[in-house]
Length: 547
Picture 1 (cartoon, rainbow, N blue to C red):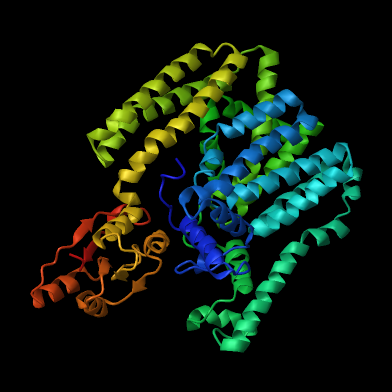
Picture 2 (picture 1 turned 90 degrees about the horizontal axis):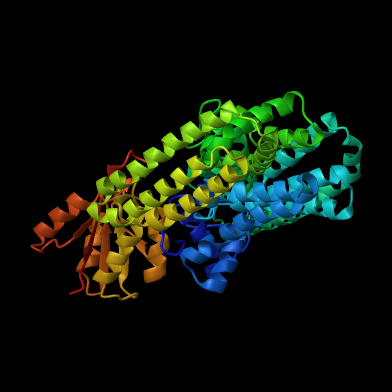
């Protein structure tokens, strides 16, 4: 369904814009797009989007393809690199657990940087753990190569994860002497070389722009730029926005309580809830009295999850680096329960909670569909609920056999995620919270499908300034304009074919202007509920001068 689900604001739409700008301008150094300044990051993910656009065209499928490949490769790397450490059976189980969890597949449905980052984090972590037992050039190459790519994807997170793991392993692991052979004093410098090269290119481009055009301010005065409304240099912005602000606090209200990421990980492994509580218990036990391999996974878990609990800034994606470690711990715990052949109270509690939650999902989805869209959604939501009910009954019948319970849990998780997107994504697309592609499609129809018509935005309030509007506007019309309502009215009265997309701040002035000019105001209203404003209405109107 990746091709038929419209863009998600704000990040994904901004990244779509960055990829389009790369192809349009040939500038592969600095990501840029209107309304997207705060979404700029290091460039690797945007490069992959631009390459995918070039191969498959500018569309949602091409935009999300790099994330899809990153998720598939992450699961494959868990199996391929994990089997030498934990055995083929456990590595296979861990890969299946990840692939049928909640959060990881969702990262393949939205073009964020986190899927690519997780891929390189997983390769680096497993290469490091393999190196401890079997020092060789291939594991060292995997370690430092993945770190280099991870830095280009998102900067510090991979350094924090792998650097923290290296330090804790050097303190606690009995094979700590092997870590010296990774030669971090030499290879760490090589790993940051691609990033440094990109930084130099970005710095040179900013300085050249200032010297040639005076657009912006001298690079040394970057801290005054935002306040003065000038061009914001990329490198200082990245340091201040993504490092200093997040260490010292949070941005855009992205904060949370202590234990936030534990809740996130619990939801991420909701499809594996029967084994979740035993896994948490095993993790605590492994921290207190671990075996060597459990110790490695616990250290991975500490740096991928527990570390982020102490950060004021919180987002669900921050702790994704811990998910492969948890998948391995869960796989080992399933094997332990299978061999133990004894009852587990925590497993029983997990099964009860799992049954209750999926019962609520089975009952609640059709109700939610009718409430948000209408009775027509029952055509596909009721069969979905019936399939999930049958799978849940089958799972409960297998509760006495751990191997069968594992298999049934994997099947239910995979089917649930499949049905979630084949049945629920159309529901989301039809609802007023995802109406931006419909707004541009309506404007295109009202222009007589004339991509040479003028497309003008006017009076959009802050909740309506969604980046996906601009992306779809470029795809249909090639260009667009923003105007205040009096100027937009004058443009509408000209002979050139013109379509206005009117926001809430301009609707009343334009209605009065049309009335004063004795013109009928034949605008089509398109309902929109702002997801970042408690689903309050922020509606659009589309009107055209094309007969």
